Image (cartoon, rainbow, N blue to C red; front, side):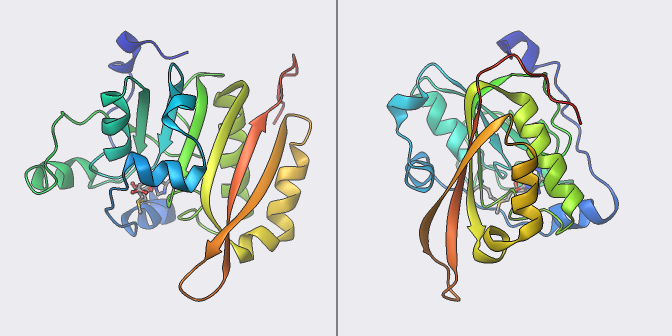
Length: 213
Ligand SMILES: C[S@@+](CC[C@H](N)C(=O)[O-])C[C@H]1O[C@@H](n2cnc3c(N)ncnc32)[C@H](O)[C@@H]1O
């Protein structure tokens, strides 16, 4: 569980190197609203009240967490982008940022949080969207999400492209953790190229099992 006073102790310096660093730098600056997240993930403000939420790859303006806080919902934003802090201060006026930056630096493959920290984790157009297409990157991401979710907690990912949805190796990763999670895919829409895109929801099972890598 992340207490407010602990938030300041979390790393604020950017991380990433090599091919991963390149992948992070290739991501675009966006700022989807709370409403956009509700539509994408199929949850409502009411369901998030009183929950601790992680927004994996929030982008520079941290809009989801800002709008959530206005409704009394506690969201921690996570960003790896090497140029994130510079970009944010440059765009402060343009983006009409009201609050100081609150993002924690980190990547989904090595989440800088303790076990069972979050009730809900979301990732919109970030993970697995921008992960390098290596099996190990997907596996680490899923492991870290499971580790940091509370029992009964949920993680939502959008979009999952048809190719990943159909990929045997991605299905196998999810199968390998079926002792710890339930998962479901919902078909949401077609992308600009006409390919199906899905939402993946992972629910961590309630139980005493400890995950071994
Ligand atoms: C296109 S933006 C999406 C921002 C926001 N979620 C939205 O929908 O408006 C992608 C974000 O994913 C982050 N990102 C890319 N790879 C990541 C990783 N491995 N772990 C965490 N965040 C990542 C980028 O730094 C960027 O903030």
